[in-house]
Image 1: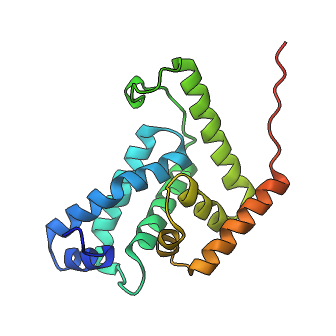
Image 2: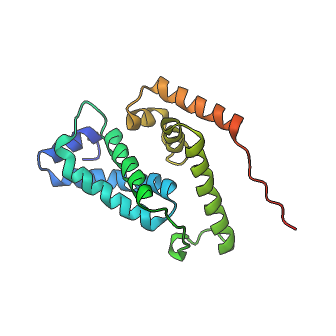
Length: 184
């Protein structure tokens, strides 16, 4: 089944094949979770939003149009669910020891600072850039997706994805101002 495209699996699921749904979840749960986590700032909210995303996908699979990539449809739902969550309440960052894999020997306070810094950096990216540029950049850097994968995910041509990434990097280079903290 792993040779099937996402669109093939979505069409099979649409016609009632539960194993096709299971394969789509297997393929996309972790990447969607990482995408949502980068936007909301903590694992609990990300897990809740992912649950809402896949529930909505289940409820609206009949509306899936196979002329467009499944991943574009999925990430659109994920982005909208994340925005909805932000509208309801601002998330709070918590430290959970079980998130740390144990392979890094850094002090927990250093790990927290690095995670907070990365989260703040991505928040700044999403504030400075238009949504489509920020999303393309996130998929490339954090999602480790190729230009071809980003093109399918965002339902854009590969040339347009390259332009989005170029403009995003250009704008960040021009407008990014590091925060300077002076300690006594």
